[in-house]
Length: 535
Image (cartoon, one colour):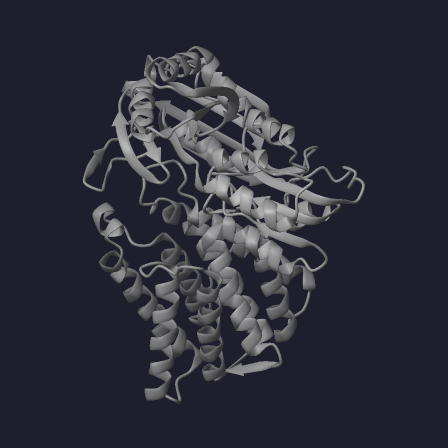
């Protein structure tokens, strides 16, 4: 093929998307840290699926229309840093090819180079050894290949691109020591490779079909119009057969969705529910044994989750508004009590999309709107939403944790100027040390620390500083590492899988050992037994 038209490009996209969907769990599993947040494959899959949905909705085979629909769908559907970077790569492809009904091999190559430039611009501090490196090296080497082979066909160029993409991915552990220690390659780069091997399969006449892939999106409908019908059967492992607490597990599951069916016997459990965060459900189950069956069906209208109540009143016009991201009914209520206008459901394992933020922005009738992502993997999507919003002043504060977001809200003053508020909120964010306690989902080694599946881990930021087989010991040791002579306030948010007695015990430990004020709240957050902020 010397030139590519819209129909052919659409076929490549479909095959690439199906291939990514087929392998998204493998990409998720490449997560370096053993914490239950390995969702790169899921984020990229949902992002690309949203782009394909827009292409299908257009009903067109015109290359400019296909490109524009894809770019718009990826932009609005982008989830997580990997999804945002992916959307920028194909935004660059759209910019390079939007005026053409057919494109040559060289033009396609140049558009990928342009996509690489936009992807790098989207990241404030680009890190090599990631998806950015993979797309840059593959694009550069692809261009060099055409310099030496000017008559190359589209099939030959994509073969070379995939070859270089795979080679670059294999080199990522040499660029990021943390990948080398964990014996994995970069997950975002792996997702990109699966997309382009899907392109390659189409050009070779063996496209990856939807039937071959795990069907992330289905046409199945029932009385529930949003979320994911999530079902799994799990066999207990020997370690958890006797220690499994049905009441505690049920409480944790009910925090994550509705229409919950839970059946427990001596061998394992069967769970069925509707949820917006299937990843969190699976991570919760995974700690107790081994999955025998997992099934997830998308039951959302038009593949677009409605995070907000569509009948909610926008409210009277005002100067300021605040949007925060949180999971857990208790945490959401705290944000509302702290003047937050809308809380977007999300966090680890299910990052909100750009469109989720755009929808939230539309429902806040304010001139200046602060967005608190409260997670490092959500910041880029929030910024992308700010970029596409033209009629309001959107200020994204780079909060990476719930405690930072809450502190920012406390320091907001509706009587002050934008400049004064931004400075005060950012100063508050900078003075919060945040930690969390969760469990390891796999055996691994991080920073020389040997970690076993099922261990409890104490993290300060993203650094694992404590491991223990006992949750309360992990909490106590974490607090010791977080406290210093300047500490004045400790906020403890109890998670869904921690008991009130454990929370009270932890608060008493702080009061007995440190001269600080303690604020204990029932956050109800999934995944993390406790989230702690020290100011």
